Structure formats: structure tokens, C-alpha cells
Amino acid sequence: MKKENKPCLEDELRPEYDLKSLLKSGIRGKYAHRFQKGTNIVILDPDVAKVFPNGEAVNEALRLVIQLRKIPKIKQPGSARLG
Image (cartoon, rainbow, N blue to C red):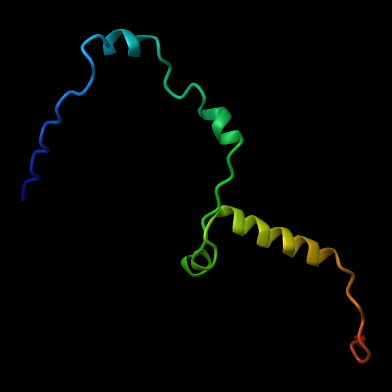
């Protein structure tokens, strides 16, 4: 089974633009390292992603978890360990 050839797209570039001269001086991946340094991608499981509409909501929930961790734990009577 052969793949069908993709239809040729019409060139929408203006005639005054010369790609050969535009692409000659470009450096591939020039800013890739800088981009990676400032990016932290986390993949959420689908069930977790359904709960949060966007990254801002995830950050807000995580900040709340951080604040809750700072609250000192209160020892309840009868919770002392034997040992």
C-alpha cells in the first residue's frame, strides 16, 4: 500500500522575498539552549489534566499544597508511637 502524494501547496510568498538570501545567514537552533533553560515541562496524567483547565490552575493548586506543608502538624492524643 503506497502513501498518496501530498498535493502541492501554492506558493503564497511575495515575489520580493528571496528565501535563499533570507535563510543563508540563519543559524539552526541558535536560541534552543536558552529556551530549554527557561522551560520546565511536566506531563499530567489524563485524569489529573481533566480537573485543571490550564497551567495557572495547576500552579495555584501546587502553591496551596506548598502552603499546607508549612502548617505544623498537631499531635493528637493516642497517636504516640511505641518503640
